[in-house]
Length: 105
Image (cartoon, rainbow, N blue to C red; front, top):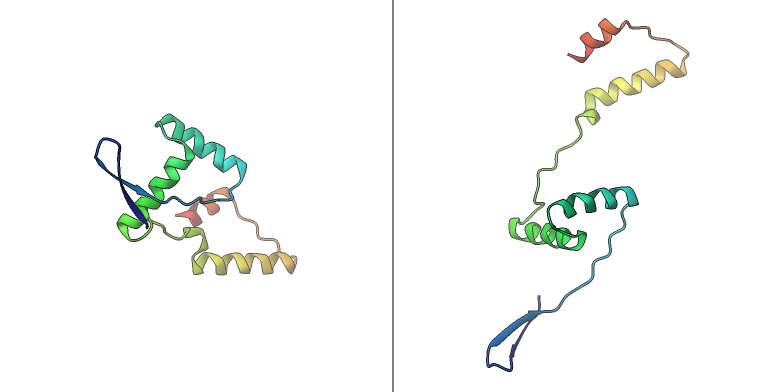
């Protein structure tokens, strides 16, 4: 970060920082949905991104908890691979709705 000190016409010290431009590619639907949320709380996308970056620096890491999607557990992936293999072999597995609900518990 580069800080510049200067003196105003009134003799006050003015501190300014050099600024950088950040370009982010994101799909239009996500950007518009986020912009609508930010607008409801009085922010624009640029301000929200600056806040995110500042909080990342302040916390020394991401400013929110990131955890893996439970769908991608080793156990679930193994079950998915087995299901795909069964389908490729032409084996059809028939379950009632009650059996499926019991499996989800």
